[in-house]
Image (cartoon, rainbow, N blue to C red; front, side):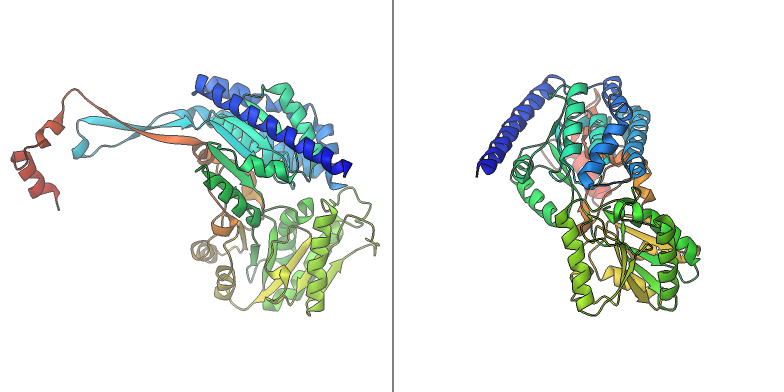
Amino acid sequence: MVAEVKELQRNNTAIERMHRIFDAQKAAFRQHPYPSAEQRIELMGRFKPLLLDNIDAWVEAVSNDFSNRAADETKLAEIMLSLEALKYNSKKLRKWMKAEKRSVSALSWPGKTWVEYQPLGVVGIIVPWNYPIQLALVPMLTALAAGNRVMVKMSEATPRTGALLEKLVSEAFPEEQVAVVNGEVDVAQAFSEMPFDHMLFTGSTAVGKHIMRAAANNLTPVTLELGGKSPCIIGQDFPMKDVAERIAFGKCMNSGQTCVAPDYILCPENRVREFVDAWTAQVKQSYPTMVNNPDYTAIVNERQLKRLQGYVSEAREKGAEVIEINPANEDFSGSQKLPHTMVLNVTDDMQISHDEIFGPLMIVVPYKTLDDAIDYVNERPRPLALYYFDWDQANGDKVLKSTHSGGVCLNDTISHVGVDDIPFGGIGPSGMGAYHGPEGFKTFSKAKGIYKKGKFNATKFILPPYGRGMHKMIDKFMLK
């Protein structure tokens, strides 16, 4: 009871602080609504030492939150990608800030028109637990590039990383510019109910629906980066050893706890066993041991571990073929790790066939023809990512034009997320809106259309009384 009271007090304190910061950021934005390119670049630049001077601290914090996460995965997927986003936004910013000239029709002559991108104000960012550094910093950098103030709510599932980010950000920025908030579910809910000028949420589709409902009360525009079951389609002639290597990059990273990780494999039915053998060999090569291997990332917490174990148990009970890859025949009981596991003969009455897996489990589905594979994807909710492996360009074009997904890699997995110059975002159940690239700058900006009329006022010729010469000319030549 005492612990519950203390937790409630901490949450209330966090919520009060959150509202105080929001008011301060709104006031500061009104005082300085359009920072220059130099000011924005300077603000973004503060993240570079925040990252590089604290690499060991970041690695330790994330690893402790997961019980174990490979240090190189944190460096590659979190710190390196954040630094690349910093370089990219700083390099492109001045171009993005320039007014865009647009054309005027005869109706608007003589005049000129253009679009200016104006900062929105205060942007709220809700961060998931799977990549807590990158998925906090990349949106922050993008929002700052657009000239906004930023508030960030970190996940309660990664408290050490959240505490470190809050500490370092508070040392590098005043609260009225950038602030980080930590706390439990009550804090997250209160955060989502605040009247931000824009809110970005990264997380599950189920929670995304709650975020959108909360934002609707304030008519807050939202960008939702959700998940879904991202498919890999293997072409009939693609070398299986190569496909296993390339899928491993996207599936083994963070033990599959990645929103764009391959969720299921669509494999030519005559090559399923070839894939099983190639995938087994690839995983064994990467992880000859797992339980005490620092390169093999753990499941983030007990709740997620039980969820994944439940998928496997239910699928096995209902007749699925379950293939665990455990090279050293280790005992995983008492560990927060889970062996890479393939699940075959999956049916629609199994939970694993519907939920986003978000872990080291992978469904393998046979298909007869490429049309069959495309139909299988299209009969299901639109995914965040789709991966197709084939050197045949015509087949690749067919898959691209016949399917919908947030993003695509041809002959690779997840690499598109690290390409800064293209948008990243979902579609339908996998999300709405996008950031990264110029689309990210526009997401966090107001595209303001402006029309300027010259000294000569042509509209005087269409003022009442009607039926005069200009009106007759409009009837004759323009109403067609």
